[in-house]
Image (cartoon, rainbow, N blue to C red; front, side):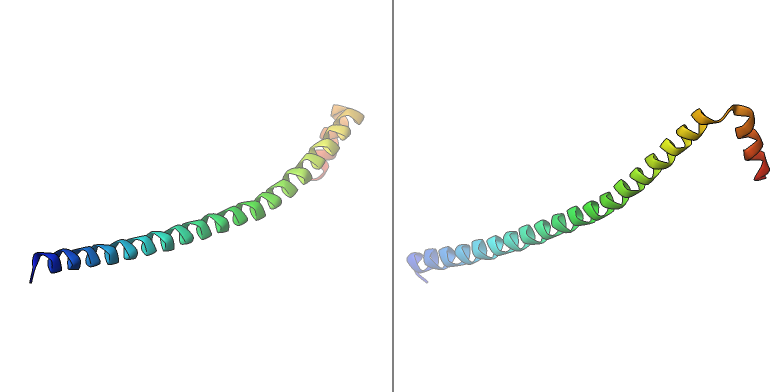
Length: 84
């Protein structure tokens, strides 16, 4: 095999290796991006649930604050112990 032929074969092999590496990188990049999209969607969906829970909790706290302002301590204790 001549030096020119060997050089050509090495260049072809190098080119194929670069193509395979590039394709593997591209596939990994796409898979990574898809995974990040899925994670973002999951967080957003969970975030909506958390936000709903936070709003409901805030509403309950406001109602409790209103109750505490309106009623005296003795009545609150009497009402609380009547549930036990």
